[in-house]
Length: 93
Image (cartoon, rainbow, N blue to C red; front, side):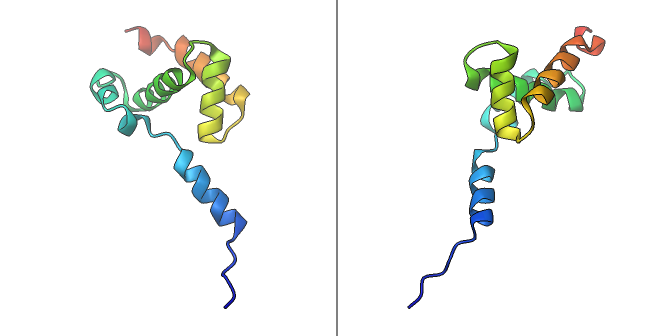
């Protein structure tokens, strides 16, 4: 009997899906803490807080490295997203 061959693309996709971080599910308290913020800000803040917890340090690059690994995007993009969020005047209100 011939063993079925696994498609490496499908295996990679399944492995990546298992490593995707879902901050609102992993940290349910975030739903309560981020309730006053706009929905789009809630998602971004949840990602940043979860990445901060996983990185273990509050450096932009460390948080960005966790985000880029989990979301599959470039490190520069994650750092830019963090800076844009922190400069947003709506978060100060």
